[in-house]
Each structure stands twice: as C-alpha cells, then as structure tokens.
Figure 1 (spheres, rainbow, N blue to C red):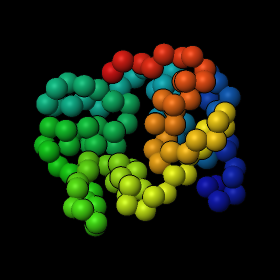
Figure 2: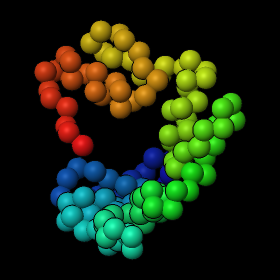
Figure 3: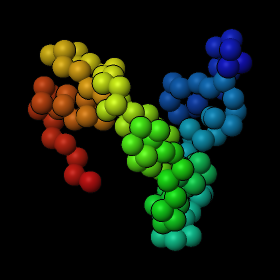
Figure 4: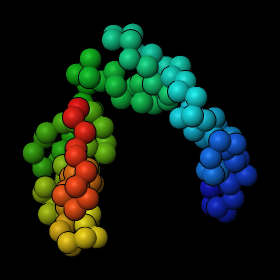
Length: 123
C-alpha cells in the first residue's frame, strides 16, 4: 500500500487516513492522549516506543550519529543531517513571505513568526 498510495485506514476523529492499521493506532493516541511508553529514568511518557528510545539517549549520553567532517556526535540522525548542512552550505527551507533561506526547518518556523506576529513558545 505504501507504493500505491492507498490509505484504507481512516481516523474516525479527523480526516487523516493511513496505509497501515498500526500507523492509525499510533495516530489515534494524538486524540486520546495515551502514552504507554514510559522512561524508567524520569517517568516521562511517550505515545511511540521509538520516541522513548531516542529520549533515553538523554540519560545514557549515547550519540550514535557522528559527523564525518568534524566528528561532532548527535542523538538523532535528523540532527546530523541538519548539522551536515553547515559543511555543505545547503539551505533547502525558504520563507514564502520574504524568500530568506534556511538550513534548519525549525529556524524557518521561528523566522516565520516575524511575519505573523506570533510569539515563540518558551521551552
């Protein structure tokens, strides 16, 4: 189904549909708030086991993704990909309001708030 684009598993709470029933079950947790995967270090809970595994690296210090240019290491592959753009100069994210370009999608989202007047969320 992934290759055909068929999405027969429809969420009954919103208009999202999925190619696999397991993906629908994970999605439904966004509506129910269910977070069955709990960190044994700090009790933070997650809707997906994969998110828990990444979180646990905060406690273990594990950084399995290493830059081949400068040896900086990261907990997630997505962080390494964003970091690599510092070496390549790639900036694939463009603001549709002023055409500024960015290497990091979260920096673009933050920048976009300058156009909307929205205040950034404190972390």
